[in-house]
Length: 283
Image (cartoon, rainbow, N blue to C red; front, side, top):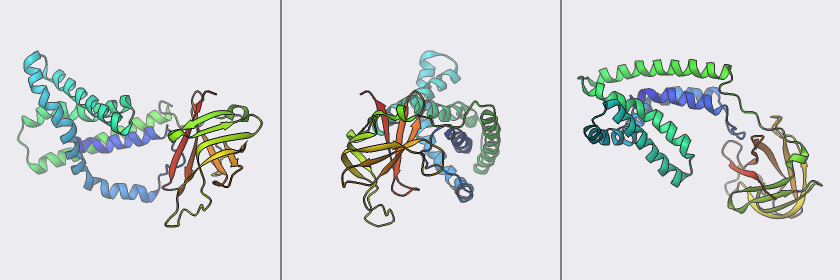
């Protein structure tokens, strides 16, 4: 059951990702789809086993004493146990990996709920090894078709909108932008800029070299101007030029939302580079 639901879950995640900013790194090609079709069936049993170990088993073990203690319906106890397991793993991943807690808990609950509820039916019948898998394959195809139809309908009706970056005028770009590791960029309305611990394009921007660094950390003053995205995506941005020998001119593109704009740059290899972001802050 865990293996059968994974392709549908992956498809829904991919459809949902179209409503999020890919920061210029997301692409889907024929070769990628071909690799997915070839290798996904081989990986599904192992991924299903992993989900069974981390989600289903921890959910059904506390469901038994909870059922004896509460005397409530079995499905309610299993549902509560599945939600508690998902929340526990979400807390761990949020603390260690800084994943968003609510989103992680919701996704893990959705993945863990069906197997936790269905295990009582599975245990009540005798199954041959092949009988389990061919039924899982049929369920997988059905769930995938359902997810595909629902996802396409949601996209067509606007329930899952395509991501559109905010359109910021030059006056709106001026201000203070801060990022990780103390990075700060101050854009003054007159075109002057001040940077502190800011990642920039390295002087040697040959990212194919063996000892190449994706970026260098620079500080100092310079100039900025509004500039369209050099990659032809019609995304607004800025071109930053520092008055120092540290780093080259760096293009920062606009991301985020109208209420919470963001600047980002992809440094290094365009297919496997380093993404750095800056969020608008108070002066």
